[in-house]
Amino acid sequence: MTDKEAVADALQRLPENVSLAEITEELKIMAAVRRGREDVAAGRVKTQEEVQGLLKSWANSWNSR
Image 1 (cartoon, helix red, strand yellow):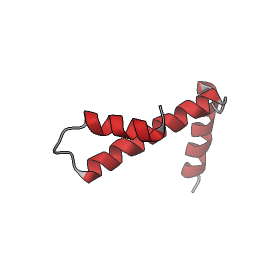
Image 2 (tube, one colour):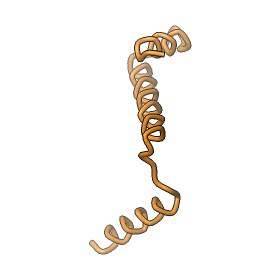
Image 3 (tube, helix red, strand yellow):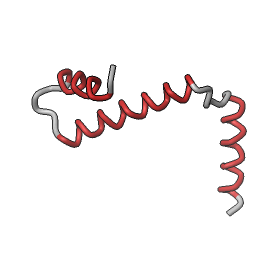
Image 4 (spheres, one colour):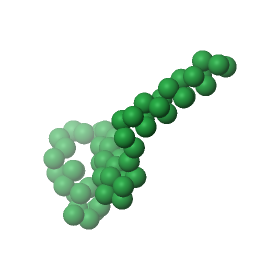
């Protein structure tokens, strides 16, 4: 499905009284999910252990300020 087809499909599923802000949010979510799927397919992922290590490192740097 092309991006244009995905947008048209999403617009059809949304209620008639949807606002532009809600449409924008829906499209942002769709784009983020699509990017995530592309990242997974390309192997750009981290294990849970790697993420936990990053979070611990970030938390330590924030606490040392």
